Length: 58
Image 1 (cartoon, rainbow, N blue to C red):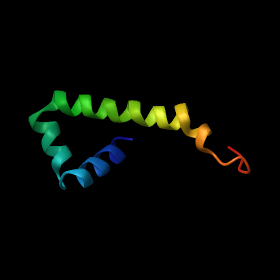
Image 2 (cartoon, rainbow, N blue to C red):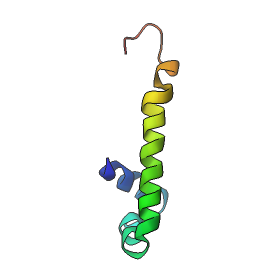
Image 3 (cartoon, rainbow, N blue to C red):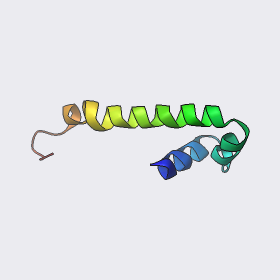
Image 4 (spheres, helix red, strand yellow):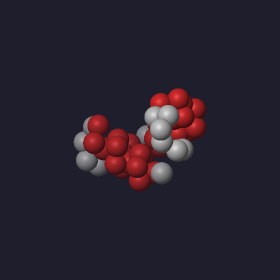
């Protein structure tokens, strides 16, 4: 999951941003990564079934 976080974050900012953040501000990196995980869990488990088409199986 961390690979996905790094890839998306680097796309939003610039290539190497996540690595720089982890070195210079490790606490901020941890906060951002945990927020990413919480958001992923919300969308993966919290609302995904609400948006599924009725004719498709889960």
